[in-house]
Image 1: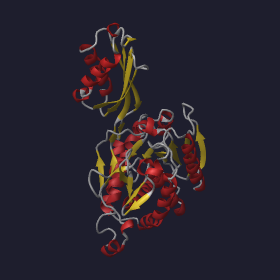
Image 2: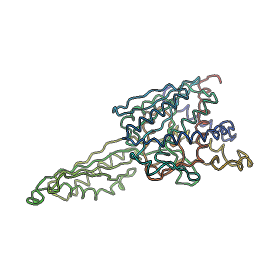
Image 3: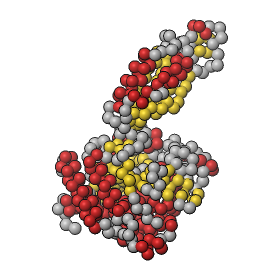
Image 4: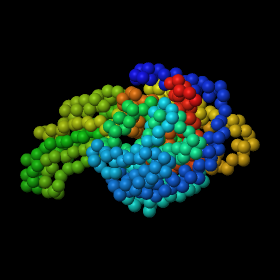
Length: 446
């Protein structure tokens, strides 16, 4: 089936599923009971992973994470292999492939790396406080890995195999822009009908709610290099052209320039100049984090910075040069991804008030309470590998399938315990529905 026919078929299929769910709105009690029974195992697996420090440059820690996920996938029956990163950085990507008896080709994505430096667990150990569990990387993205592994454990126990291939892939460089895995993720997206990505579900915006993402920013790096002229800082300062002062001037005058370019965000985040106290620096450079939420905005931002720099120099005979490198493409769910999001929302409606019965709801322990609202979050300025997965236009892609939490990349990162059961239910129910209806759409007997 070509891409356009697949697009029409998938949207129609998902909308049909959504419509049916809206009419029935009956919880799949077998899956819900299984999700509740699996919560303790998920928390245990999550602790195992959080207590492995795995910053993006921690090769030893990332190797431990790779072995852990490989062993976990193998125990679930996957054919596992290690895929070398395109930049040859270890440990590469972990991939597990399951073969079923249906027609759906689906991939589940998450990442093993965190932003934290070695020793972080001494400062921020695993701890639980009521409905929150804290730990470095617990939400972003070890919670996502835990949801994938434990959802598959539920489906395995049920004997579910309504798919042709189900591929699980974990990369080790997402937090630095996926330089060695981006093209591999893009290729995987081009080989599948559906890709579900397990970045955490933001929960700060609306208390008691969870969400899935309809778009995410593209990421880029901008650099500014100023060439001046070195000279003795004491005996011949007039012969120098201070590149550091010019750089500082240019950073100040471009700090708000993204305000004039819709769909862009720029923050200067690093700078370097000079090697000797008594020398006028002849070169200085700075780097910026750039976020893009509109097509064409990256090019417009680069041009705006170049024009501003050329129009308003401070130090004569200094020459600033500005460049921009795209690191990760924007993610836009599009029509098919939005259909998946609406299916997710309908699945959450199965857990709505009254669906489980008043008596059962009251008797549930707090940690097993089922949360019952799902937001379709328009976008975020955070970057995500869903941009790579969606880049071919082949797969329907949905982001934000991980656990609810907050504090990513900061101190006291946490997940919310009462998001665990709904998130397990969401993944298992969505795969069950999609697998069943892809079979029906392709005329395969049920």
